[in-house]
Length: 207
Image (cartoon, helix red, strand yellow):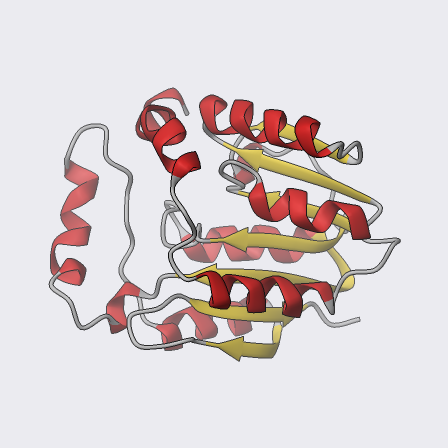
């Protein structure tokens, strides 16, 4: 995990100071997510970065476990949670595969801007499905680079061969939805705010 986390450790401080690229879309995603949260919700976020989303949702749920592979990202996230007076959130350095959590442990799993960065999105989605309680929801926002009009989709696969850069997977929105459905999810909500924008999806594990 250390080698994979090096890039994110290096950029953590700079990343934490950057404004949200599309604030209106981010706020809409937060609002839609809130519709699926209750005061009794146990929430897991993997790939939490500097914790902004987890910290925002923590006051309206029972508990949040926020994980990331980057110690530096988590250090910043812990500082932000402390400054905000949030006490029902825990942070843990691990990736999704390493997480010691039993099947059916979580009401909601968040995967924001992460599925295109994992080694195997299908395996990650299956893992999320198993971690969710029956009736639980998976909320994700994903850069489906295969649909992008820019040149980036052609060079992104080369990143895996370059030292200290993260793997960036190229797949389409349709391929992402197929992966969710193949894992057993029912898609309840999907929205893309514009061309070359991330796809926001809420998918439910059947009861």
